[in-house]
Length: 374
Picture 1 (cartoon, rainbow, N blue to C red):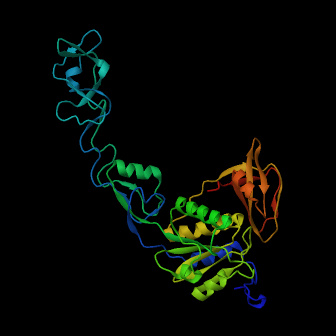
Picture 2: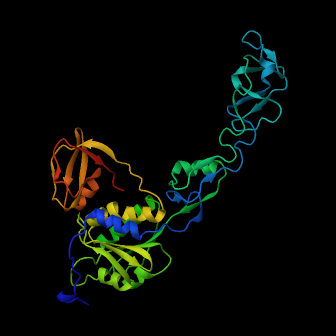
Picture 3: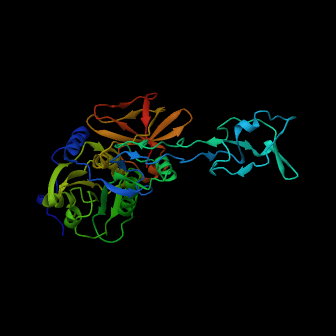
């Protein structure tokens, strides 16, 4: 049903981004830790240190393919003075040495005649051997609480026999207003799911067409990201629905694109309302959604920006924080879109730059921090 003009959602004023982030931070509480398998916990924030229980390796292992020998028996060996070693045992990389050697001679250092081995080079004790506890000692901390779990951390955990970890990985419901197919809303929902997963959260998809109040207040998640219905159109009602389900902290943000975004609380959980334009959704998630997810993780945002030089001037309106898309060129980066970010430029962009609210923009030649798009 269309909403009469006098009852429509209205933005009284645009709230500065810094104020929005402060209010958001005051509303957030880190989610409870849960035990997760190492691979599933990728990107999550550790709630406890990852500690190795036992030394690795537990016993000395061959570090190269070769022959297990006692180093003292090879002291006099040389190219012209081979030393007989009839009991030498061939070992492969990773094979335990047992008691028949304290070193591994390379395969080419031994020759065999009539079933008897001769070593042609001296080796020292420990040569070609991975000693016990070299990879990790008992009680050694692999990664500390508060850090995010990286792919290399997961690989090290699995190699060391650590099956899982206590982590904070918030579940965020990704929902959209309206029923039926909508290419833009569906594209935003899919992109948000990827961005949430890449930033250490667990996206939970909602069925299109479900009642907004139920999506905002339903259980099973730690927060909600709702797409669409944030404007003043005759069918926009997402902000009013949030007010009915809980509380609206702010509606209207001094951020371009994305001015009609809102956030609040429903069922003691943060709710982020995102406009139904892809460029606005990207901007709101990058500058507000990631901060919300980081607070729920009990961690921080992992930035991967790099400094570069603008090849053209960027003009901006004072009072608005603005996201500008840039493309890499030989001399640095060139701005390709601001204010409204066409869909094609989102695919053509190599990164994005933030113009602070107090700035009128950047001159050509300015050094800027360029961050990658998810």
